[in-house]
Length: 294
Image (cartoon, rainbow, N blue to C red; front, top):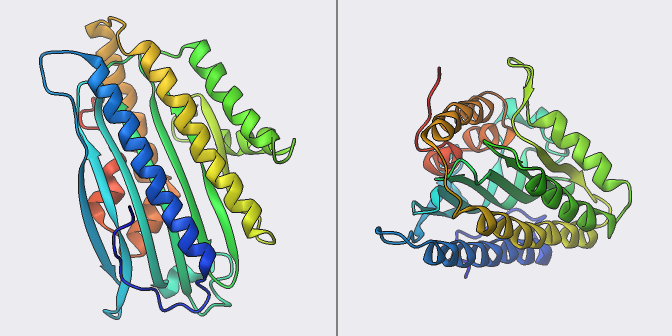
């Protein structure tokens, strides 16, 4: 259920913003329930993980209310650290940030944004880490963006193929060009140029989608969330009981360093949150709990 948040005064907000925001909170609840069920199935001497939720509010630079969100964080037997954040924020972009956002100059910097962001770092090095984010942005224009990508320590062709097949089916139900386009966009985006390597095995990434058809953009964004909820738990369940070695765990901790480097140096969501006065703990939730650099 969506908690009560500060009401947005931005005149561009209407029913679809409310509908999208409610969906992001509903998706969060579904994901948390499935992930907690996986914890229950894992067995072990320790207690299964449970999500702890914490609400937060933000303020604009002039002190006016600017919405907020809720952070859900779990540390468990299967999920070493997983965060699922939802936010509904509004206000005015800082002047130096306005030129970077489509339609922000025409809206005098006013914006409304809502979305969900998830990052899971797994205890087993055989279970791939994952990221999923979908969002809706309104300035003088309105669009959707997001995607999901898989970051394994020990890549498994079956995991990679099934993950991409699910995303391909989701995209092709809307437009046959979307999957190859969004896959290529993901490969370009989740890339570390200073290391000349990809962060993981990819997925899809899209932005500025369906400015002329909000209902279609929202429908696709909703289906991306449903697809993630369908495929990723299956990947986790078929791998989480397999034994792993200390050498594989060490390799996982080193690979996590790449995740840190990308999110702090290149991730647009991190920059957007920090530039708009978001909750720092929620913004940096994506960082892994333990990491090694050689």
